[in-house]
Length: 266
Length: 294
Image (cartoon, rainbow over all chains, first blue to last red; front, top):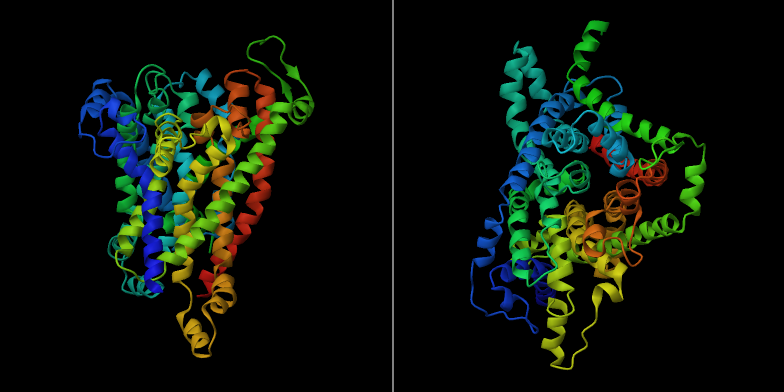
């Protein structure tokens, strides 16, 4: 009986993975081989589509995505780590109200603030500016990061903090010797999750950027031409753009649940 | 604590708090104000106070009304189906079998494909009636005369939902799997010794324990899927009755330039989200309290 469940698990895993595998396989076929019915599994492998994709100069959007994602992640950490400290280790009054305020901003749909943000950008000349986009991604990810970092910092044992204080350890020593070792894996997981959400974002990027600051997802939406065979090229582009997220996600696999549930589920 | 010490405690919190208020709360206040104005950027001179006209327009405009319905259907279907599939997968993964780690990794992969890329993949590589994988698989199974449906034009909303379910099932599975693995094992053992069947253990022990994880998954999923833009924009461009509120608002303001009406629709989305969010916050805070007790 238990063998049946194992087989079923494998079958479901392969079924869910099939579209991803199909995307990669199609990207490695020539255009005519990619567009056959029934599909060809054994067609010769070629990297032509990747060549064509990189010849179409995807670097500006990829670099834009990278700067917006990395820039906003650094900014998020600079703001979130001290805030989480004030919400877990040296708690301010009404710390849980503050936490829920951060969470409630995450529940405000992006579209609700889109128009004023667009108008501000237009009047201050910040349309099509990657730094402006990074600031918006910071606000999008900050609540997640504050919650996550708080749940990691809450794991710092109170007894050790008290012992350090009794031994007369200053703030810097306590942070370095006691807090940092516990917080470091948390900071790593938080950064990866913020990176993924920024890299994936489409709506802000689509509305606020143009030819200069367009990001990789925006580039992808414009990549499909109506003429000729393009399937292998689209799959190659989708694979390249997804690769950083797949790597970051698998690297953060153990902390992924905690991150996605804002630290509520361990 | 004296005032100086209290402010010293607050200091590390303030930059994040001020930043959040400035970037997320002020724009919403502005949206509220604009929603009460007559403002179309193609007709800039005719700008003024409109009262609740834009709200009346939102609820009487057939496009926006159907967008409200589409948003509700899309969100409910995607959340429920991915929650059920996620539960099944989590139960499977909770057992020991050869290659469990690898299967878990394969199951997470759909969630880690960039949403736009996933939408393009479904639209062109899977749904395409001539050379998509779905019709290709039908040809494999039934030979030359196999039915070759037009997936997107035949069932547009289902097509969008299926792509989203594929991406969100791993999310639900991860949360529910964490719930299953935090289940107290001694109670299960005791029940088994007392002669309880697997089904009784599932309905009396596992499901009650999973309840708050199911709620958490449903509510977090709703928050993200209510806001979905990528799949609707990419797969159907909002056509064929698949335009949800985020897409419609995007169009009202980006193509129709009706700022007032777009803002009013935005406020409606926010009110809907606040209703969901109130429940969500209650669930999260109950988990937080449990952590405090532990």
